Image 1 (cartoon, rainbow, N blue to C red):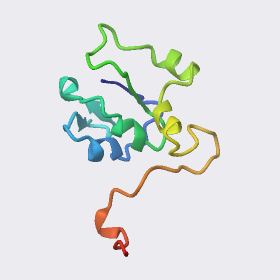
Image 2: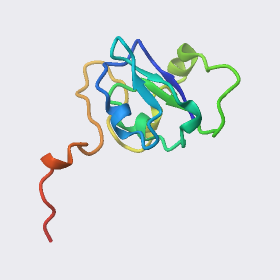
Image 3: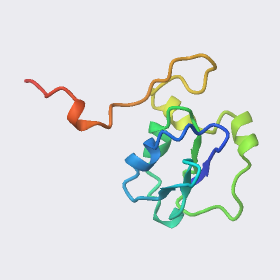
Amino acid sequence: MIEIVSRERCIACDKCIEVCPTNVFDRGADGIPVIDRQSDCQTCFMCEAYCPVDALFVDPRSHPLPEPPDEAELAADGLLGSYRKQIGWGRGRVPGAKLAVGPSLDRAARAPLTS
């Protein structure tokens, strides 16, 4: 279940809002996504997979934790945003590295499939 949107890391790109199949996020007044419907999270990891700056943490358990996990501990342990690296999308949060994410979300811009 989605547990953290890191305000420190987030660049307000809205990828998490766009890919969430259950509309868990809303855009905050400052542009940073906020978790507004945590109970609707399906623990699909799409938001974490598409986040280009590893600003999200989805706990694999399907129920919210009694207390949110400590963001600093997750970052120190390499767990904040680690799902994207585990599936081979991007290189994780590497200073100076070019950001690499999954396939484009803009379906209209994709080249047509050929056989």
